[in-house]
Image (cartoon, rainbow, N blue to C red; front, side):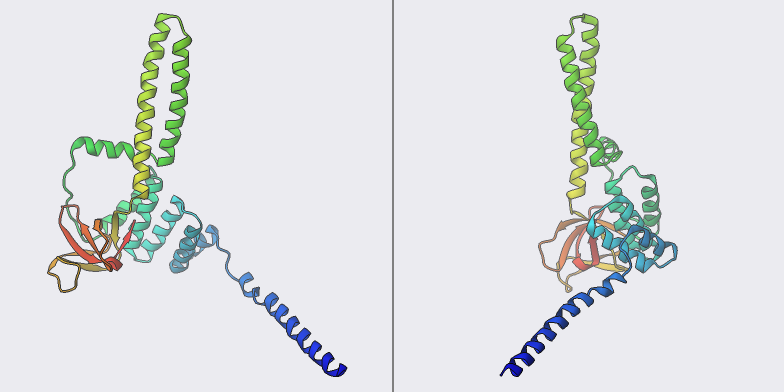
Length: 263
């Protein structure tokens, strides 16, 4: 009986020990994996291993977004001849750093390679000016300006209240009005930039071409053809598998949701 118990205990102990050894040995292959760093992605890009660079940049972006990573991802897609994906990445980078000249240059370079050349509806001049001013800085930069100008505004109001000299008060009053204007403008611009970041109403065609239909169904009437890299506005995404889009010239149609990627 003792022998049987000894054998059973030995078998149980051996099995447990083997399980522990398996648990210890199993993670070993992970140590041989390529480290997930920007340097590795950059090296893959330099070595013209664009698919590897794309995979690494995409994985890094899952951990946290940045304009630099999106920009480099856009370059990788561009080199891999994936124009639609490149434009999506450049657009995302531009949303984070609208004043970055390298991002804007490469974005325009990619857009020039697209097939569709649709003239947009002309905007009223002050709408264009507002957009240009808004896009001079990121949401974070506008927020910093808003906070600094607000603090200076409080200081200016305090000085105005304590000063007694008339000519000095006039100067402070003028400065107070200017600071108030800057504070309001910075908050409005920052809010607009943040709205652009959060909005999901813009998309890019990521396949070679897609036919827009009059209804969300393959049997719908063909309206127009869109090619890779074309940017459009999303009007309705409530129909499963389909999305209603609007072009810059105002034309609308339905296309498969798989044919575009949201910016």
